[in-house]
Length: 438
Image (cartoon, rainbow, N blue to C red; front, side, top):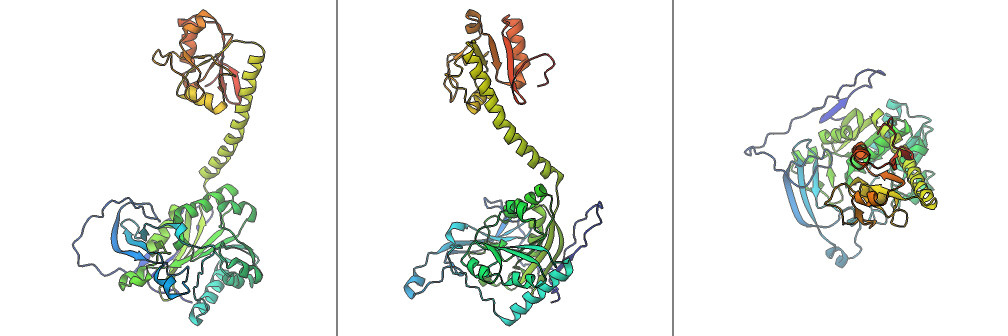
């Protein structure tokens, strides 16, 4: 099926190593409004596509029931259905249309009757042609394809005919029907972490993003997971396009279940903000839907952050264990040990490591205002340096690294103490020697 004229965006992937340029969006201008221009108000409702808080009110209904899920089975049930506020706004930055007061838990996706008619002749023909186009345009034969929100698996069956290994994710009741149709289907919500195992060549997501309370977070999760896994699967998505409805003042396109109503601009913006490079954007099916083809931009920063976070988490666990073992060994050896630095970073260290009074009860602080108080959380009495002049410590653990050299000078030069000095550094407790880099 040829794309319709409302909008079309097409870029070829740049050669490897070439600088990427932003895709160009061509669209028909909307008729100018005969209203006096006004600056958009700042609101507490952020755009779901770009997070801007500047938006224009479009329409508001105070008592709208669910109209897609939860089909009532009696007149009484229908008339007593719960109503919700449908406050429709348009983002002043990217043009996205969304409604406020949306609560995902109001919608029974797992057990609701999502009765969408998919057997119309024109709609079936369109899906056939779309599948064929995506297969031929992107070489999707013999690939591993994941569909998010696959429903009964009908679109995946079309992709399966090209020899693709198709995997569906469907948290609703349609999952069983997809499995019965021969689709490897998981009855769960999709998370980006699944890509580490699935290693998908392509991801399909049709008529799902408009239902999500935060589609940007959802796509960012996938983009970041791809960077961490070192894969760049093709992402093919489709959503209803609201532009024609806006042109025709068509109000029945606004549904509570559709928290997002995408324009071409906002659909492109959503993917770019989430870390994707847009390859193709166009309206289809008489301008009622918009599709996108994109790939995640594999970010070196994201990979570095992921690796560093993993290392930090594992090494900190071991560091805490080593610090406790050191303090326990000092206590067992009968040493008089003092902790220097009672609040702030000192208190944080004591609580994070679990240095309670039974492990070390002598806490010193240079600030006379803190003396006589108690360490937040762990409860040791805070004493001044005089406590160590009266009864010297064998070892002092300085609990704040960034002020460790100042405290060292105070201990040595002001108070003349000769106790061994230590800090928690790198992998555990270490001597505070002259050449230690803090």
